[in-house]
Amino acid sequence: MYKVKVFVTLRESVLDPQGTAVEQSLHHLGYKEASEVRIGKFIELTVEETENVETRVKEMCEKLLANTVIEDYRFEIEEVAKV
Amino acid sequence: MYKVKVFVTLRESVLDPQGTAVEQSLHHLGYKEASEVRIGKFIELTVEETENVETRVKEMCEKLLANTVIEDYRFEIEEVAKV
Image (cartoon, rainbow over all chains, first blue to last red; front, side, top):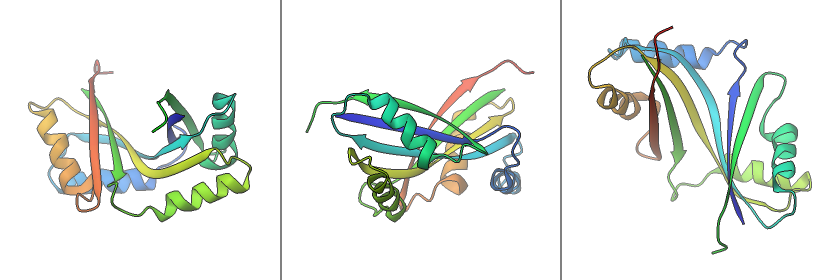
């Protein structure tokens, strides 16, 4: 069994209005030292025994978890003992 | 200067309809081996020179970046040379 963590982020070239809004809010709250705020997705999932887990996770990202036109993704796979 | 990564996740006890929807979609796409899908936020930001950066980032999370009633958060702080 595997614990998978997927990090989906907007590409550098893509505008991030949500990040900009959060940055302004932080400034309003007095945290002027914060900048370059980017908001992405952090997806955790469990993958049962499968042969090519890396390929399968890559496919899941390409087909569903990330919009590869405007987003980048990376993932970490950790093998864990079956509970 | 610091690069900060914040991971915001729903508490275990909180239902994750978005995660459930993604899980079902993965199954429809043929990835039956995927389960326990949980969707969270991955926030990246830069923090200028400040004395108690850890305390300040914790405050940012408590006040804005995470809804501590239903979400947990953790963060990683990496010092980087000023560009």
